[in-house]
Length: 221
Ligand code: FDM
Ligand code: MG
Image 1 (cartoon, helix red, strand yellow):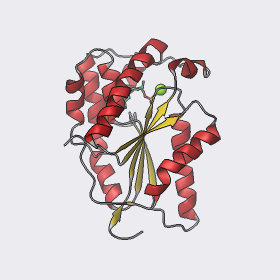
Image 2: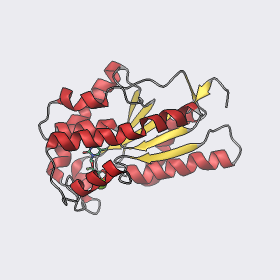
Image 3: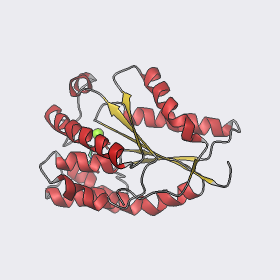
């Protein structure tokens, strides 16, 4: 890797049951294999938001499993704080040339809270200044197809009616990200089979795999 390049920050977003986590892990393996094979690909780390292992993450986990109740504003800020507690780690990895993959990020934060009726701008505010992704891969799947994939689990937002509302906010976020130039937003047709989705993903990721130029931008700043 040339010293003028840093690692790429790649985010995977989408609805529940769209195959995000499966594909994030396949992509992680693929990038790691390339590196093992001696290619010029930098190291790669895979993060998952919410990160349920931290103290804040444990509060989020209890909320999602309906073991606790929290005001909508309070849980929104906890999700955001859970990203901020990893922000400097993300930036440090990128500076060292490591690719950072994130399974969900700030866009999920806005989509799930705005769906409940919290103002969009209020939801976006705590995310302003986070490390900005170079590329966001939005896994597009109809809520009906997602629901047919073995059904939703038992967590708080795993209901068709919630997913439909979230999808509408995601559409708005995707347009805003593109218009405001907050990194690239690429839609992935997640209704296809696993291999096809992996190939579509790889086409979008490969140009960034050997590193990107310029410093890490800050989201909406
Ligand atoms: N979620 C996720 C939010 O409501 N806000 C956020 O900021 C993030 C990152 O948490 F329903 C929601 C999305 C999902 C739930 O996510 C748990 P996973 O990916 O199923 O663990
Ligand atoms: Mg889930």
